[in-house]
Image (cartoon, rainbow, N blue to C red; front, side, top):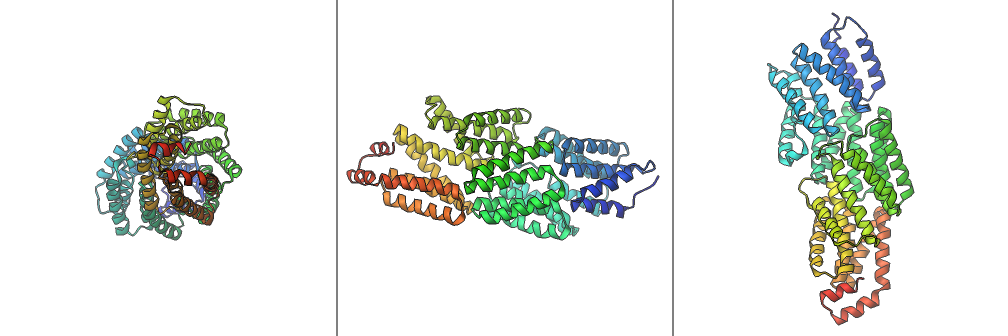
Length: 497
């Protein structure tokens, strides 16, 4: 049987790394059409196909090639190939939320790795590094995953493998970002980009720029984020991956949300959702996230009917996935945000509903294991809920809850060094100062928030702050007179109605 030269396989793999998928596909197909091809090389070609379809979609084809490669690898008892095919399948199962299936496949991966006899072989060490950075989900906790990635990095440095080193740096960035350590994540993404540019790894160049941009967005550095997202979009289009293009279209849409350009944001999210569906990839968590954001826009446009329709769509998505899939959290949070919107519009007054809103927002805001960005959204809405509850209930116990929640919000802003969160924190703190009848400090806080919003171009938030400030000025005499009367806390709350 004819064997493909190792150099030829390396050349194809290099094409994959550089995003030249069409050319790689053509070369692989040429080899697969050769009836005299060795079984090992046939499997290697199938694994490369698995890898390409994982990056360009659809996942169904990636799984098809991966499962075929795995079965043939088992038939010839080649542990290297069993590992290579099974680990690719694990990636797909994880990213589509099929966690139980992924864990079973991971057992096959680990067994194959342990069955390789030469533990000093570079190919073994390369696979061990890959296994170490793939074996844990985020539910394992930060410390466990960090230790595993640290071991992986030691191996990558030991075998002097820049490709593997960049992968570990990217995973370290994702780990720190997920657990709300944004500044540390930024450092790892920047290091990853440097190494990825050296190896020509287009996937990591695109991924590190995208994730760096997301952190800049949070910090309020909108223009810098916009440039990075645009650069990443160029790379994604070069990769010819509708799935990655869909993610970036959503990211750019979020930029316009901060800018207060709702029409542009709506357009980009519509394009993002269409691109996900074109890729036939509606199982990744980015898809329901884009839909979720579209629902938030709909609420801002007072299109509650559209928001409810999207809620139903996310519910149908979550019903296809395990409880750990992000769609479950998105559905719960969107449901309660819609209820909160209806409550503030006077369409919902039931006490049970109010308690439900508070309980769910608290759960998502303060949960130990939750996506950090959802945690922040829930925390914002919880503060907003408490402020409005003051207006209607005059309940002094809510005053204490609001103080605690705003304190957490401020701590988060300080921890993340986020101008966006800081401006929002100032906005809520100003409301607390009004309750304490400190009108001058309330104005100072609003001025601080307005300055951040103006300097960073966060026009949507700036408009909200400006409206709040104008309302305070209009009611200034009322507040000043009430201050001189020094009422107790219950009477103070009455002035907020």
